[in-house]
Length: 280
Ligand SMILES: Cc1cc2nc3c(=O)[nH]c(=O)nc-3n(C[C@H](O)[C@H](O)[C@H](O)COP(=O)(O)OP(=O)(O)OC[C@H]3O[C@@H](n4cnc5c(N)ncnc54)[C@H](O)[C@@H]3O)c2cc1C
Ligand code: FES
Image (cartoon, rainbow, N blue to C red; front, side, top):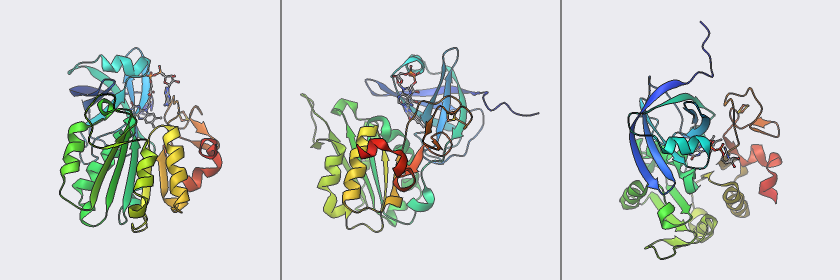
């Protein structure tokens, strides 16, 4: 029998973590194990309302229970935010290409994230830490959020900050603090790139992976290009409104690329001619 690619499989919500006022992490118990690469996404179906593409935020070494971290923005994400442990959602995937592990493994890596963009990077960081990457290579995480209360995965970031390993460096920044306590930087993420420029320039053929809002990607890419970073080793994950997730409907097209199957992760080199927002 031919399987219907649009048919979601049921998954049970087994844990919910409130990350920020508008972001929750949901641990899903899948019907069967999946293999995926960090950076790939699932289509999450909330019964009766619709579907949305969401990156997997947990380690690919955990194949049966996966985590997704979802910001409440509209119809489907708002309904998911009302869900409780024990509720069922539909899941299709994993889809997309994921981060280029063949390029990342064996060289120093700089991960740059903004807001909920840390979700797919968390999957990658977990994988790299679990497989001993930092015993061989340097790993930098530069992360920015709007304010201290908007920082996702706070407990995990605290653990990462305390890893006693000179090869894993974590830098945090927020746009503003109001009256909250904050012991890290203040400013946009690209100001971290600027500040760390002398250190980053010493890395061994490094790869940069950027996940966050388009405006952040634009400024970070510009800064990296100014540093003469190799264009083929600047990668970013792009978001587009999607429908099918499998290259059939054309909703996610950017130029001649479909974000759902050619991406969502692209190198600057392959996408430069399609990225008018980078040039502006
Ligand atoms: C590959 C991929 C991975 C993603 N990973 C995550 C993730 O890990 N966590 C997360 O919270 N979100 C992620 N997103 C974004 C998420 O898919 C959208 O926020 C979600 O589809 C919104 O659905 P909704 O029904 O709640 O909102 P809607 O009611 O559909 O829309 C609300 C508003 O958001 C806009 N919008 C909808 N979808 C997108 C989109 N893809 N990009 C930009 N604006 C959009 C709409 O135009 C509208 O203005 C990802 C998107 C893609 C393409
Ligand atoms: S979402 Fe249908 S082609 Fe990409």
